[in-house]
Each structure stands twice: as structure tokens, then as C-alpha cells.
Image (cartoon, rainbow, N blue to C red; front, side):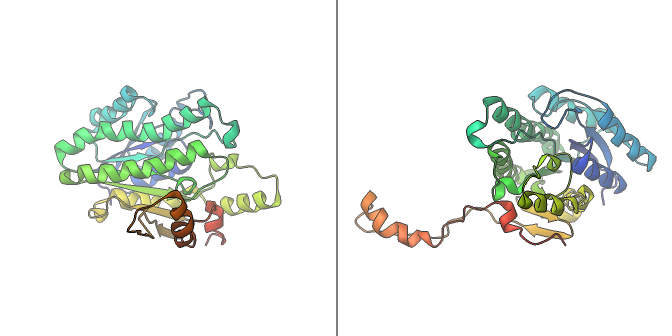
Length: 301
């Protein structure tokens, strides 16, 4: 499905990113494997993870080169997009998957916890997309696949930084889809479920936490790759501005925020009228204070 295309996959040194890169290569794409080889929390660098993914692709008969540039800086992100053009002469697909975690309860979260996660996930997705937008516009084609999360779409405990970044990515993707549609450039989000290095940090101390981890361990990262390949392919040429999810053998289409209830008062609103009239009218439509585990409460199938 991707014959002749060139794809940059960030965070492709392992987990979901690696599986997406492998399947895209199997589908015929030439791959730039981008990964700085940092720890889960963002420390250190190593070329080994990217090199390992490259080796697997080549062993399977595909073509790949590596980039160890950070997505979290404007100039280094541009170097990764330029690498695709230098090695292969073009760029067709960008998968924004790179990420780090600094999970902690909100009242203990530090400024560094916040900025590190936002820089990699949200700023990194912008920097990579912005760099690719220029060649995409000139060639009047291109596809973005941004990795989001139910932590942002629904909610999770102890992930304010991650959730804010991941929900921000959905707004970024929609804006790209709106701004770039005139150039035949598509932008969609993928919300994956998988047992990977990032989810392995989830605590498993209480019986409830252990049940969540057992469910996640059933879902290999490779389960998310088919949806990413489809969204990057010409088979999805009329699909843009959407948010999809994959969970084991299930696929989802997520809704976007829209008005769901309204009230009107001819004399205008006072705080007292809001409490007396608007609040009771709205209350039954309030969104629950739930987590992604509450919404996805059945076992993966």
C-alpha cells in the first residue's frame, strides 16, 4: 500500500513506533527511523534502538536510514525531514510517535516534568509537521499520522502533562487538516493501546492496577501498525481531521467536542439564574469524572 513512498517515523527505536516503521517498510515505504535512544523519562541518548530497527527492516528486504535528531527542537526536527529528502529524494509520510513520560500526581508535578513532556509530544509534533509541511505543499501531497492517547481524549490519573500534550495533538492535527487540505495533505490521529516501554511504567501495586496491567499485556504494539499504514496510504485519500483508536482487534472512531445542551433566558443571565435554571438543565448532560479504563472496561478482544 505504500510502494514508492518515504516515511519518517519518530520514536521508532522500539514499541509502537518500531512496529509502525516495520509494517510501513513491509508495505513498500522507505523509512527514516527517528529515535534519540533516550530513557523513558527522556535522559541520555543512544543510536542503538534506531540502528536495531533499521537492521530488522533491512533483514526483511526493506530500506531504512536513521536519524537521532530530537523532535523537541525546531532545527533538529528540520534535519530529520531533510534527511528523508537527502537519502530518498522526497517525503510523503510523517508519523509523530516519539514520547516520554513523567507521570506524577498533579500537586507534585514539577515545571521540568511539565515542560519535558510537552516539548517532546506536543512541540515535537508541531516541529516535525511544520518542517514537512513545506515539501508537502510543494508536491501537493502528504500524510500525517499523529499518536494521541485516551489519557487526553478521556482522562487518566497522574498524567496531567501527558494528557494535556496528547489532547493538544488532536487540536494540532485538526488545524493541520484544515489549513493543508487545499494542498491535498491529510492529518489524522491514532490513539493506540499496547503493552510497551511507555505503558510498562504503570504501577501494579493494588488489585485494580494489576488488572489493568494484565489487560495491557495482552495487547502487543504491533496491533496498532495496520491502522497507521492505512491512514498513511492512498486508500485513505479522503480521510482527514479524524481521531481513530486501536485496541487489540478493535478499531474506534472518536468524537470531537461539540455543544450538547443549551439554555436561553430572555432577560440574560445572572449567577443566581445560572444556579437556579442553567445548572439543573445541564447537570444530566455533564461528562463523568472518569478515566480511560472506566470507558474501556471490557477485556481486549
